Amino acid sequence: MDMKIVADTMWVLITAMLVFFMNLGFATVETGFTRAKNAVNILSKNFIVFAVSSLAFFVFGWGLMFGNGNPLVGLQGLFMLSGADNSPAAGAAYQGAYSAISWATVPLLAKFFFQLVFAGTAATIVSGAVAERIKYSSFIVFSFLMVGIIYPIVGHWIWGGGWLATSGFWDFAGSTVVHSVGGWAALAGALVLGSRIGKFKEDGSPNAIPGHNMGLATIGAFVLWLGWFGFNPGSTMAADVNAISRIVITTNMAAAAGILTSTIMSWLISRKPDLGMTINGCLAGLVAVTAPCAYISPLSSIIIGALAGIFVVLAVMMFDRIRIDDPVGALSVHLVNGVFGTLAVGLFAQDMFMPGTTGNGLFFGGGTKLLLSQLTGVVTVGGFTFFMALGIWLAIKAVMGLRVSRDEEIKGLDIGEHGMEAYSGFQIFTAQ
Image (spheres, rainbow, N blue to C red):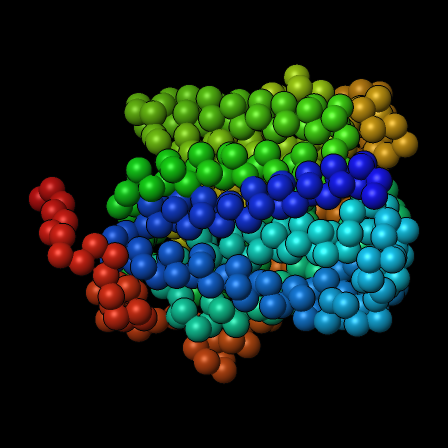
């Protein structure tokens, strides 16, 4: 067997496993940022969402995303393997029903697993923004429909050979495909659900509802930072030593810059360095560099990450001001900086890094052509995802209900939804 295919396959599978491990990161960040009475519920949602995503992507998502079809949607290869030659004899030359991803020489099932963990990440993003008030069953239904329908249609436009791919739009590892799609769906859910009881005063000003375990949140942030070293460089889907080395550095430097600027911003605003803002600054830098990571220099990644760290703090304040309740800052991290990271391709890309792809961005003499293509993608993906998700949220609300009862929300979803407590037997005291 060709040793390059062996090396590429090992690289793809290992990085996919790192992305899978990000499920733990999301679970612990979200749990730490929310209240103790909802910890079991948050953990359980993050556990079950990947199982639901796996089945939805296998049955519908993969074929809709990568199947041969038209510029809007894949039409072949639904149910993952129907109509596809997945025999060992097909090997690296495999085309079959999924020609849009035939450029990757690894086996079909390795391609599927790598793309699956990305789909699961998009669904997990929604969990944090709708935390502490959504029915468990309703969240499961939405997650299945998101990964089975919304995510793969957008994914087909961009990564499956669809209309955005052919119009000059670039998103290397998913600032739009994963993060802003998750963010737009989360925004629709937060609007339909409404804010948590007690989040806003009668005059509209926000009440702080602190998370109960910043230790868990910090562990989760480190897990996500680690996972991103699979997320971004793994998207090469090949063990290209020069590319993956550069992408690891651009990824890391954006995170580091985001940490510093978000900490400084929160320090200036509240007179104290807020750990929650530091954590979200790290994640904002990572989200923002996800689209441009392969097309930019390390210096550009520092600038992108630094701006993301500022944007995330301002976005948290903005969502509070317009009375959109996002318990963990998912909208500020994934939506706002998913959009920014996508536009950053049009600003900071340099053709020298991946010749024949993006060309140069605005800041490197390329004019506005690439930036306008990126803006077109942001607007069309945002509009489609938001309104599709809004329709699904409203349908779920009408059919099975979306929000838990007032009494259950006050007592906590752990008892109401799961009949157990995360800290059974412990007395948790708060200062009076």
